[in-house]
Image (cartoon, rainbow, N blue to C red; front, side, top):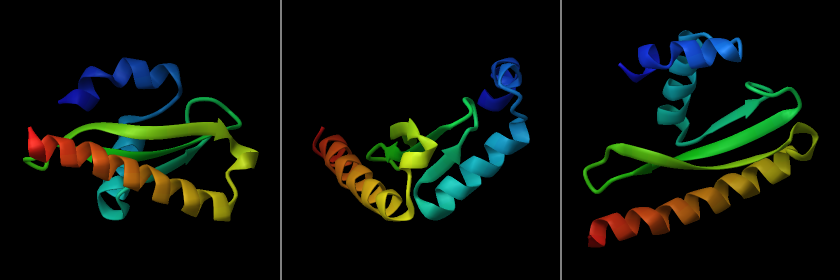
Length: 96
């Protein structure tokens, strides 16, 4: 499994594979994930998965920023923008 193969890399940042599993479940449930200081203190990230025509997650589109810039209003706006861009990318998969 990918998590096992990368466990040493996660450990470098003090991240346990269970934390990644939780993020993956949250992403599947919400359609996005948000982290604050997961790998670098003071840095936030939002990511939206990109799916192939078959529904497999093949990548993600993400934005990173200083945590203090990620307000509630900005979070909603950025998730919306990421989802729109991901929809364009996924539409290209459907046409291929």
